Image 1 (cartoon, helix red, strand yellow):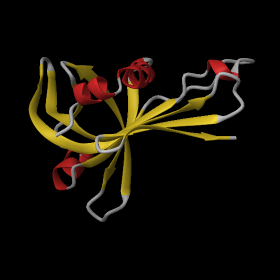
Image 2 (cartoon, helix red, strand yellow):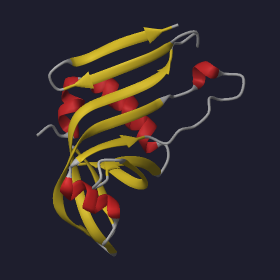
Image 3 (cartoon, helix red, strand yellow):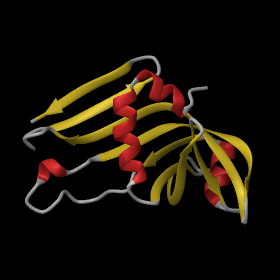
Image 4 (cartoon, helix red, strand yellow):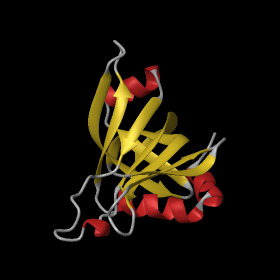
Length: 151
């Protein structure tokens, strides 16, 4: 299992950029796989704490049932527009894909089930400093960090 702390240890600056994008806003989007094999997109909150990436599912929610049947997920950061007149100031988008591992009850005043992320891929998409190229940074446990630039 690859925890968020493993990403931070392997590529600390990259992990910090990705986390800033995720932490900038509360609500994220998660993709799960329906029983018929089709995609399901749901709003979700996620948290980076104690070296883990965790997220929950309310009792009876379809996304939780999806994750128990097929644990594959893709989590997308909030999307924001570039600052007006400053496209290079855009922080970018981030995505984390992997498998959800059941981790017990959510706890506190909230009912639901908690999942930990077994991270298989982390991607940050943004612009270069001149805002002339799209920059895609991809980290995987077996491949490390690589960068792709597109004009």
